[in-house]
Length: 467
Image 1 (tube, rainbow, N blue to C red):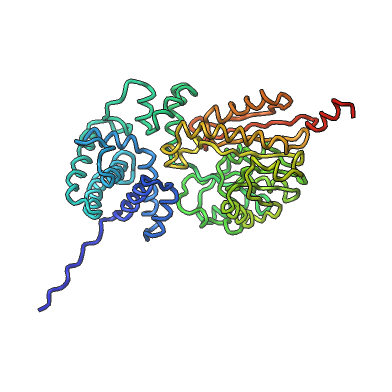
Image 2: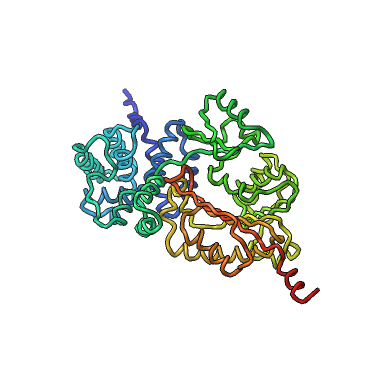
């Protein structure tokens, strides 16, 4: 009689989600960006919506908390985390994240699925090590109060910056800088905010719908949405995860995704219908389309960016929203005066949403804190100054230029503006604003409104010689 083939047991519930998250951590460690790596892994792994959500939480959360998770490994392993085999290190991160941070995963499931995943990925001999380290962490924390922090049970450094870096999984240099920028309590609030999943904020397209109509559409679909009083076209979806493109009104161009503080920049520019506007570093285009809405699609709006691919995505989004006023140009904004001399003194308003360190968006970009370095910022300071200097000649007399970043680094923000005003005494600082994660809801942004002299440099020269 034939012996039936042995049927492999089905994987433990949620194992595929954890495997997916582990592969994302592997890819990011090899240099991939977290959002792209997750998108690729979710595309190749058929997961139910709840499992996709778990994979996303484990991947992004483990990346954000990398240094704290390493500290737990080092405290309970014979070898420091950085010297562990990478496959084992990232697997332990997925397991530890569930134990320390996930409220929906029982600790028993966190341990058992980690051990099973070790066997699946070829770490059979190390499965007992995974089990031992995770259970050692559980024992260390079992006698702690119910309301405990993820670092409770570790020995913390005495030095404040080192303790801040360990507890909130920040690079040491950033923790030290934070304590020079902010009082200790506000620095900790910022650090906590960087580890919270970001809100999903939307900007309503007033050329297609209004907030009340969109709120009704969301309510009919069972989607909780709340207006944000600080921004007249803003909604936030506090409980929403998953692909926003599946929500009511997306295909119809009724709204786009945009952080609440990003939405606050264009009102400072105050574009008026019929004006000539330049968005000098436009992609991905959230502010460009917001300018088009302020213009009521009447005027001249140029979106300039070095990347043709990013401009194509910007144009696709503008088409979805129904904005016909936007013209795109792939060019280096520092060379516009030379390449487009007709633009000298041409624009009523210019937006420079400058390339920056992105330290205000660490919650939104899980791996950014591990990519940005002090050397990166030094290079950006030079680029930001070059961009400002290059764009000043393009502004009409008494025109407005808004300089904006999504960082909280003072040298990239007020430092650039102070340097500009010192070298261009005829220019005026009309207004500036800094938003901080943890002190304000939403991402961290900076914006400064500058006004050009009422007389252009060319006209001033004529006046000086009596013409």
